[in-house]
Image 1 (cartoon, rainbow, N blue to C red):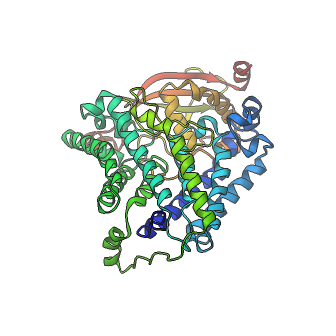
Image 2 (image 1 turned 90 degrees about the vertical axis):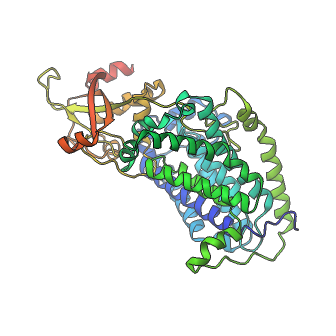
Image 3 (image 1 turned 60 degrees about the vertical axis):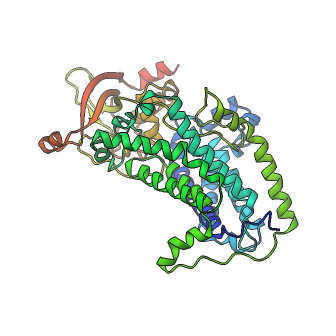
Length: 485
């Protein structure tokens, strides 16, 4: 069926299936390491309390029927094993239903996590992974050619992702329109990487070029996806290069890597051959067998559903009041995307400190807790964590912006530190009390900026910080108990 089969996109399918599965591997590793201290039975925002407040129809999840920390381990390991099988390509060697079943299992398991994850899972790339995983389920196996309707839906996803990000910037902060956004963004982004300071110190005219190039990549290049073949392949290449630039400049979990994988869906086999032939890698021959009738019916049904669901994100793209990273249904299918519609000019960090002293007054000795990704020690080189997502560190960034939604978990977090709770302490890079309980904790506010080259040479510091007061004054467990009641 020529109208159904996309014979020239064999490599694109393999890249999407294995790449999306690889991101699921990262996501389920994070579930295994972070979910229980953040959201478990004794977590900062316990899932049992959430499912008592929120009905299943508003947030469908396996955990509505029954929650336990052991079940989270089962979900995490099951997702990790299924995703790993897809990365190495095992289900893809069977009939079309095999990869479909594997990806739908991943989608259902991760949907169960996201829908009870509250603020710790309230990020656009969670919905992006769910939508990408759902579509990847219907790309077929090596037995059949990639189905054109699913490829078109993937291109529509990339179009919404990139154009939505471009429009939210253009309609939002004037710093994007006057090309000054990157005077600040590399310094104030949620989690800087090891090269972020070097990017920040680039000459300002180059920052303006970066912003202009970003506008072209997000507002113009997505329209090349409307012309499949060499034109779309070149456009996808531009998107991939742009995303790699973002990978180098910061830590945005798996957003950039998943965008790269999805953009690769628009690169046809002829274009892949231009890249792979010099490396001695042959582009595989397309499948010759026709897709079974049941698979055609399923794909067309899914395509019709996604077209119907597209009315909301399409309307959102055209709206002056565009929503950023919005899901219009509880299944996280056909979502609206966007990032950094506003730019923070100054970086405020919440530094959490404890003291063993009985009196937390002027003579107390305060020691800082060290987080894995967010700035703290002014001499430390930021690490590259992406595509891994440090959810507590991101929450601390939003807390520094004054987000009231983060306060619900921050008070329990301080209590866990006072209890020297081991699962919570394992989320941190440094416990200054080595597993012992402090008597008091507090949250100090500091204004951070990157050190200039001369300041770096003189002090050895990568950051310069100034005292901005207290967010939470010294508290002990009794004070927190009174506050909680």
